[in-house]
Amino acid sequence: MVIHPTTPSLHLPPQDDSICQATLAQALARELGDEWLIGVGVIFVTIGLVFYFAFPLIRRRPSPGACITGCQVVPDDGTTMTLRTAVFRTLLGFIALCAAYLAPFIERDSKNGKFWLDKVFDTRAVTLQ
Image (cartoon, rainbow, N blue to C red):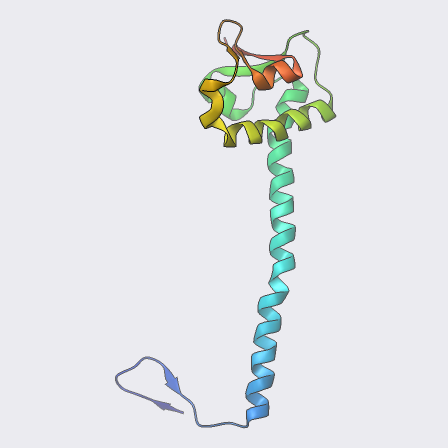
């Protein structure tokens, strides 16, 4: 093995072509094998985020972000949300967040602390004391 003084790379002597092909095939298999790991990771992170935002809705407690901003989402009738309703509201909330540029043009009830997502799920935003 010879190290060239001007470049940091290593210059290896020529090898058998079959060894190089086998090494390349192993490298490609390793790279392609990580896709499933990335996919599983994205799924777990998405599920974690959904339940991070849905869990406070189920317990009628503010999330850490709600504590910082001083507001909380609660149902209009004063009951607790079911898991299904909280998860659907969270998923639709992600869509509402992505389409936030449309918010000024969509019906909003500032007096009651509601916008279209709250009207769909009969919830409202209240200020924490």
